[in-house]
Image 1 (cartoon, helix red, strand yellow):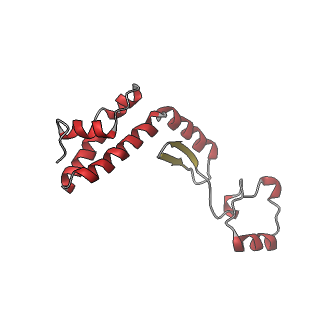
Image 2: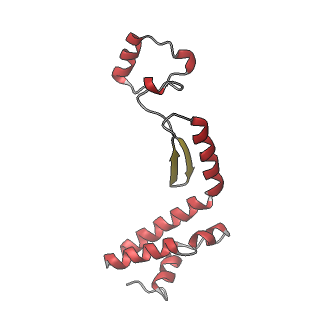
Image 3: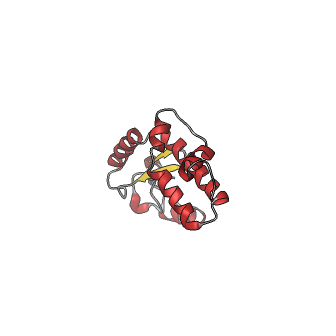
Length: 136
């Protein structure tokens, strides 16, 4: 990455740098091989916002809005859904039933439960979804 103070890098030097590395000039996208989006992470959830380097400040502000809308509970929720999905793959032989179980879990009140501090195990969630704890 080149900062504005390094922007005067000569064409010959830039070609040498480009031979072995991708280049990002912070305030000159036309000289860059890539741009960096504003990234929001909550565990496995990653949301990237980019304005194509037209308005980085707007991307940053949008990222801040997303951070307020997607709290830390989203990371816990997605980790739990992932464990439910893995457990269903092990215990539910029918592919269509497995898909339905994961869809119902995603559409359930599970996020709200996690948001309220309840963190059921994947076993408990799968048992609830399959009824009476029986695996199919």
